[in-house]
Amino acid sequence: MRRLLIILPIILLSTLFALFTLMILRGEKEPAGSRIVGRDAPAFELKALNTDTQVLLSSYRGQPVIVNFFASWCAPCRVEHPALMQLSAQGVVIIGINYKDKPEAAQAFIAELGNPFVAIGQDTNGRTGIDFGITGVPETFVIGTDGRVLASWASPLTPNIIENRILPALLGPPPTAD
Image (cartoon, rainbow, N blue to C red; front, side, top):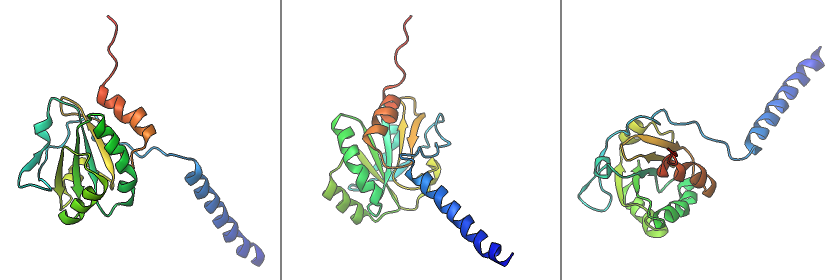
C-alpha cells in the first residue's frame, strides 16, 4: 500500500505531462474566437503615435480595414510584423493600436521593422483593448465596410492564417450566381 502511494502521484504527473506535451505538439492551434465577431466594432478615438491628431475608426467606414493590436515589448509581434508589411504592400489598410506601450518604444519598434500602418493610435491605458476584448498582443480584427467585425485572430498572423482567414474576410463572400 505504501509503495502505491509513492508510485501513484508519479504516474499521474507523467500522464499529465504527456497530455500537455501532445497538446503543444499538435501544431497551429486555432485561438478562441472573439466575442465581437459579427458585431459592430467598438468605436475608438486615440491619440496618434507620431502626431497631435486623433486616430478614429469611423474615419475608415466604407472600406474594409484591419485593426492590429501590437506592442514593442511583445516578441510575437516581431514575428508577425513581416506579414503585416506584406499585407500593407498589397494595399490592405491596417490601423495599428499600440497597446500599453511607451510612445518612444513604439516609435523605435516601427523605425526598426518598418511601418505597415496607415495610422497608429496609442492605447496607453488599455481601454480600447478591453472594448475589443483582446486577450493579449498581437491580436488582429477584420472590420467590414459596414463597421462590423468580420474576423479576428488572437495570435501572430502567419501566411496560412492570412490566406485562409484574413483575406477571405476582407474580400467578403464570393458573388452568388443569379
